[in-house]
Every structure is written in structure tokens, then in C-alpha cells.
Image 1 (cartoon, one colour):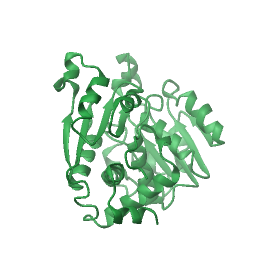
Image 2: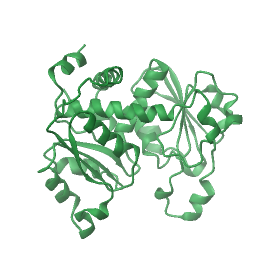
Image 3: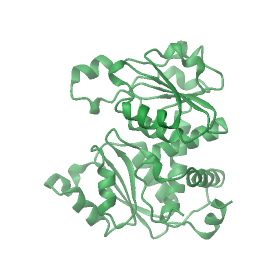
Length: 316
């Protein structure tokens, strides 16, 4: 049971628990009325210390579709954080008003700290370059829906792999599935961190390789996970300008790719995927955004207490 649980990083849930969430999300997609009003009377606090479109709005849409309500802020300047209030005090206060907290914060480890002071469940919506577990659930559900299974895949990650929290979270989660191979495509300055390679992939015996050229490997991939070069993670504007256009996926680069490959992107994109690619049937990033709402509906319903019928469904 997930009732009352925190979600700080992908490892907080077992594969079986994630599988039950996926089944519940799939049931919600098939029947939009399923779980309607299951969270009536519940309040979700969305605390976003960084900008967000999809994550914040999909959580709010999920809660509203479940019959609950939302409160919170979309930027810290509109809260007492601007007056110097500590994160601990903010969390203690919000715990008095809400039944669960969704929080995004630029500081790595902020979500874990919040969970230690909260009297209600905390869901990490991104903490710096560390983790983004609900995006990982979204990514896994999308792969499951579009590829039929999560195992036995070659997954390519392209772009900013150093600061990309979505990459770090998904790589960690995928390492738990059978026969996964990973390809990391980035300039040397934005390579995936050593702790991902040595502490997770090598420890789990996951096959991986690194390259700085997308064209060399795109024909080998089942999933291509594109990411933007994140301006907000750079301390040096010159470095950002030099690297921001390192990889741009266009129709020409797609020619060697498999017909069954899917293209994912956590969004927002800047210019790393040309608009012409949107018409390609393999482009799946807007489907991915919609799956994000379904998995967050399943997550909120489960953490806040799933009705008996849904609980029985999840046990099947």
C-alpha cells in the first residue's frame, strides 16, 4: 500500500508497486470516470520554487479530476520564502492546511529535507539536478504503453546528461528492468555523472556506452530520450551559448532510425527537436505529457487512500 508514503526518488517504490500504479493509470485512461471524486475533500499543496508548466499543471489537473482541490504557489516570490522563511517552517505550515505536498526546488536534497518535517506525504517534483521521480513514472508508463514492455530495450539519452535530473531518475529506474542497454550521447562537458555509471549501472551489470555523435547510434535505439541544455544549471553564460545547440534532431537525422523507435522528451524543448519531427509517427513527447496526468492521478489516489474498488483492482 502506498497510502501516506513519500516519493522522493525512484527507488522509494518497488517494481511491483510501480506496476500497480501503471495498471491503475491505464484503467483511468480507459475509463475517465474511474476514481472520479475519490479525493473529494482532499487538498493538494503545490509548492514550486522553480518554473514549471507540465509538472505543476498535470498535478493540479490530476487532483481536480479526482475531485480534490489545490493550493500553493508557482514561484517563491509570492510566498513567505521571499521574507526569509526556512523550508522547514514552510513545510510545517503547509502541513496544517493540506493532505499532500508536491514540491519543486532548485536545491538538491530539498525534497528529502521537506519529508523530514512534513506530517503529510511529500512528492518530489524535481530537486535541482538530482531526481524527478514522477517524470520517471511518466516515462516508464509511456514506454510501456507504446512499446508494450519496459524490458529488452536499448535506450539512448541525448543532450544535457550532467544536469538532467530526468535522465538521472530514468536511468536509475531502468536499471531495475531486465535486458536494458543504455547509450549516452552528449558533449564531453555534459556527460552523465560518474555516480550514475559506477554506482548504479556498473553495480547492476547494465550494458552502456558513451558517444558524442547521435548519428552513429540512432539506428541502434528503441527509445531516444532527448533533453534540452538547461540554461538555469549553468554558472557561465558563455558555456551555455557554446553548448546549447549541440544536438538538434531533424528529419535527416531520423532517416537511419528504426521504424519502431519512439522519441521522448520531458519538455519543454527549445530547439533540440525540429518542428518537422512532430509529424513523424515516432514522435511521442506530447503523448508522454498526457500520460503524465494519468500516472499522477494514480499516484495521488494511491497516496491519499484509494477507494476499495481501485485497491482491489491494483491487487490483481
